[in-house]
Length: 568
Image 1: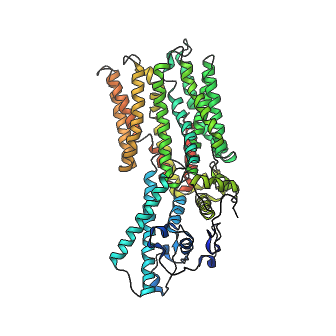
Image 2: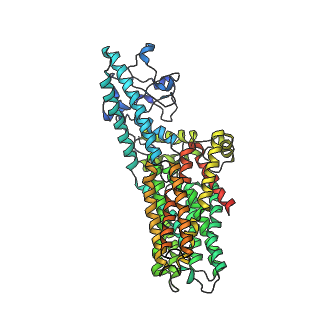
Image 3: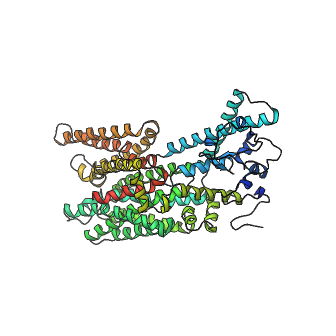
């Protein structure tokens, strides 16, 4: 009989194992069949058949430290395959499923730029851990059947083989992208592109939009974007919980659309200013929503990659606005430059019928949600009921592990914040994160992206060229930063970034005083942006995901956004 959310394969749930993740001792002690070691080949490690799946369900005593006690010394001969969690508790999961379970619990449900290294480190650690368990089990099985221990060379060979197989499967998890995930990435990526685009779109047409305005009027219009951002970030914390991730993204898109329409068809600077505030609100909203939405859809091994992708969408948006300024920053075409926000918002709306909700949010509201299971089936490309239920258990268990008391699933939970500051380790990290955010926001980088064209006017022949060069270097430096963060520690990058920006500022001042050629000022602006992107740009965001426990990441991230209100 077909199930609620897909065809049921006969015998895909051997031994009557309940698929809700709650098993008692009798249910874990399933017969092993012919006693063969299930870890001996690739198919058995993956648990792809009925016999193999049943053989992987075993018992390891919780009293054993990390499941690594030498059972021979206790006179216990296990002829059954077994797996245990890192905390020593018994599990019915296969080694691969257990590895994904641990990754779900340890990697936060957020897509953060540069988090790939953390994901790889966790994957390697678990692969090594699982390989140790497997070699120990193989040794015990060999002794129970043949009264003979495996040699050290055999154990090392088996350990290496198992570890490589698990790592290979984790890598497959990172490259398997389904159509629903692609659509979600596309829609969320456009939102981040619009954040970058509208950050810089006012940079170039300052002299052609409603000619006759004064500097104060233009400055207010430009800064309205930054004023609206923090309020959007705060509002997002509530709406993503009450309306769902998809519902919040819908609201965000229509906010972008409304602001874009008002800005494109504005009749004076007042309407431009109001439109900039609305678009800034949507941009702040998007900056909170997109990492959560993609982080809850993507498997743990893909979250850092998607965080990096959205960061590239943002800096690419800045660069594209600089390039479009060449043909469109004119008296007759500046409205077309602003209409890009409308066009892309409409493209997002066209994708809404195919956009899925976060299964994590649905499971929080109802752990038996049929809709969540259907989404997980499509999202992960699963076929069988037990695979879907195993994935559901990963979501539920990880949500519980990353919650703070009764604050589970609430991104704006005051209880989670109180729990964080009451933790002696966490509040110090929070202070460090807030200081880094202050340094990022007050270092002067926003002036470059908001006013570089006005700054270069009179210094170089065509200020638009200077602005485009800065935007291109910004994209390239973001790419370089990705590699630097793989090989260098965060403290070193922050120090080099701050030091390089300081030297660039000194050089720029010297140029403006006339000691060097004015063209050299372009060089120092470029180096200023480059040093920003390798340190103070990405690391204040990445450090939250790396330093905080997974359950505090969402709360710490929102605390950082609230700092922006204080800055304004």
